[in-house]
Amino acid sequence: RLETELDDGSADLTGSIRLLTVSRIESPVYDEFLADFHRAYPRIDLQIDVMRSSDILSSLLQKTATAGLGLCRTPHDKLEMRCFLRQRYAIYCGRHHRLFGQTQLRMEDLLTENFVSFTSDQIGDSLSPLTVFRDQKGFTGRIVASSPSLEEVRRLIFAGYGIGCLPEHIVRDDIAQQRLWRLPPDDGLVDVDVFLLWHRERKMNAAELAFLDAMERCMQRYALAERLGN
Image (tube, rainbow, N blue to C red; front, side, top):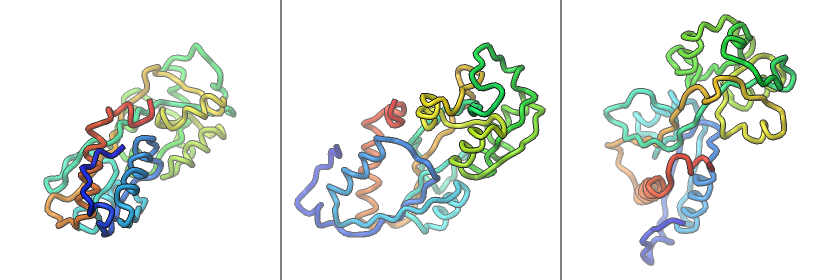
């Protein structure tokens, strides 16, 4: 629940919030936060636009939005950033792949496998942790399929196009339903952080200030693992 010290005027607070976000933010804490915020401030309007992290950053720097949820590998002087979600990525193959169901696999068994990759700046660009990992380990397989959409990357991995990286918490059900199979390394690959970002010098309306304040208190209340539903 939002521990807002609500005065009598909070239900009457009006205004608009424009939130930019990457796709597939899966967090029960975030869902409940939005429900609580709407209950506390029923007259505040919320617009959510989905875009790539690089576009979120440039929009925030141009002060065209309240805040963003996206990836940001290098801090910006003008942007406040708080780690909102820490997504652990691991390597998976799909039910139609020859490695599916094999239990004694080692990293060496994966090196010649074809890959399904992200084309978005999120985690697919040349400096991303996933790309660096692939290069360091000496993967020689081709990138045979790619998409900027996590949903489509997951579909292509399931369909057997190749192995690929996905966030652990988003594919739990796929593992349980034996649509996907987890591959080495056992402890996963890398953490990818999703940040709450906003411009330090942007003049915020009362609705926007209430939103950021409530969001920060929500993050203080729940540890990173709890926010993923762990």
